[in-house]
Length: 255
Image (cartoon, rainbow, N blue to C red; front, side, top):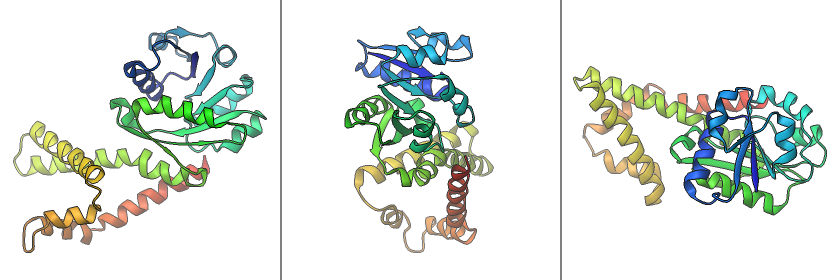
């Protein structure tokens, strides 16, 4: 089977890495096209155009930015084959209007695909079949977890799972800078901050406990940690997170 990527940027590169390292696609051809020919080394076979990719691939993966999607869809005629798009803000109805009968699967991974620790939301359009969704789960399962999410929740998912890594990086950097201010070497502060955030997320997922329950286990009465928690609350930490998520959702709706 030929998997044809249209667009070979960072996310496509991460997915290709996951597919290769999983060993599940060793008998398939990972091909694609990008306007930047220097990215040819990212695929087994480089096509000459979007049109050729859509024509010769058995599965088409649209990995271009939303603002370029109109032009790409105007140039391709994929026919009766699964088409997977990772473009933010583009609903399945958009693709169905541009290409009637298209078997579209919408996917929303996040940047953590680069370390094979992403979470990807998946949903299908009217023309797709169950096998198309299972195939997409196999592809994105190589870079992390996959979740079947109703399309009406995609904007919220995008904010919580796809935009939030940027918030997490900002938080990790702030922790590290605070550590440096307190006298820690920069590398030590960054390692400590990143490892703590990683471990905290893992504990939430593996323990099944609510984050607040875990927080209560750390904040001893009259202790030091509760002072920091209260300072964050007083400064509007939770409200800032809520506003950030709302801002992402509103922007997603405007795309």
